[in-house]
Image 1 (cartoon, rainbow, N blue to C red):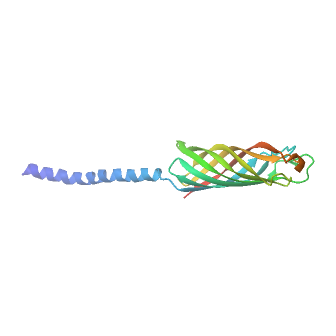
Image 2 (image 1 turned 180 degrees about the horizontal axis):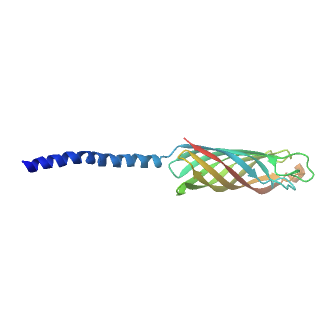
Image 3 (image 1 turned 180 degrees about the vertical axis):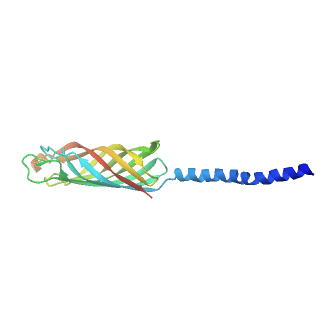
Length: 203
């Protein structure tokens, strides 16, 4: 009888410990699920720079803004739509013999592959296609087909907020300034380097 009493006391003492041990994996599982949570959309806005190789005798690049929206399909693949506008130079004049300040506007779309690299750090690569307009220099055509590729790095402060820096090379095809209909406005393909740094928000 005494033995049964001892067993009953021991069982009663261990019961709360058993309950705690059963609830711990669940809490850990919830934390893990939260850490690996993915979002369908992300928006980006940041400061941007582009070179100006399509303008004759250009000396300086332009600075402006870059914004994008990405629809993610799972943890690694997404589709991006982005736009940028550049109208501030790093020096004056940007173009030898020109009193007009050029502007560059582009709208580009394409696939993106992204992944976590280590800890808070992640990376991505993308390919982009769309159109580009160079204003202020009477470029022909008014809007050129444009496209290129690039990538970047991110540092995640939380699941939703990240700091991103990226670089691209974007090609377009404008005729040289001074070209004429008699010359058929022959295209002149150029490649501009771009760089941007800004903030990502996921939802």
